[in-house]
Amino acid sequence: YEFRDMCKLLRSKLCDNPDWTGARQLATAAHAFAKLNPANARGQDTRNEVAAMATVGRAATAKIREFNTQELSNTAWAFATAQHPEPVLFQAIGSQVILKAPQFKAQEISNTLWAFAKLDVPNSDEVFASLADAAIRLAYNNPSAYNPQNVSNALWAFAKAGRSHPQLYAALGPVGARIARNFSMQALANVAWAYAQNNEQCPELFNALGDFAAEHVLDFSPTALADTTWGFVQCGSPNPRLLDRVGDLLYRRARSLDFTPQSLARLAQAFMRADQMGSGFRFTEQHLDGLLTG
Image 1: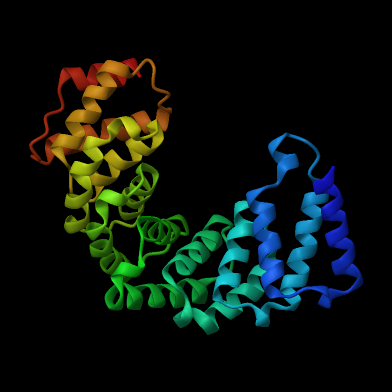
Image 2: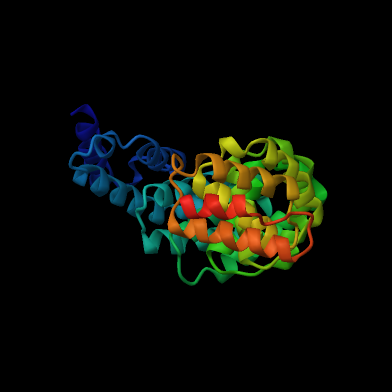
């Protein structure tokens, strides 16, 4: 009840006086809705939250020129995380991103790209292009600015949006290779999927990630494991150790793991293609039994 009352009060204040608060507070409010949203977590009526977020979106649009790069990024991330598309707001954010892209930090670049891709924001060619240029400059000038999630989100965003950018993949691949053992399993899977979707290659990156992935096959979700295995093979970097461990896991635990039909199809394709590539991996009857059991 307290949260609902706060939502009503926020709407009332912003509707009565659009200048009641500033850019930082609006970005923080949007971030809070995306992170908390307690009514939605309990499966209750969320109309108050949705209405309050729409009000925040309108207020942010009016003040968008006052937003710094972090506030632009956080606001875009919040609305995408809440799956609350606001076309006018994102058009306004995009115009500021294009102007301020050279000032964006690694996390701001990746979060903004992720948000625009997540919501499939239309007419965002210049946003993606300007942020890609900023990401490439940062990768070459200050690679330590990136963490694994930054690398993963940026690459995933371009693949999700169906946008090819070989220069970006070439710049971020070596950055990811240097921090390969810090990747989460989901971030690793997203990178493998992104390279495969865009038909890009980076042996340096996949060599660094391959053995690390093989050591942690039990830590992947079934979908992430299938995407990772398929991505490595599609990118021309099959890792025999990873493939063997995935095949063994599938054989021993296929009944207890919740693989989707698409994940099983991707694993079958990866096993067959890796065997044909002469990668040192052999597609055996044991692997086939695991796929059939799944």
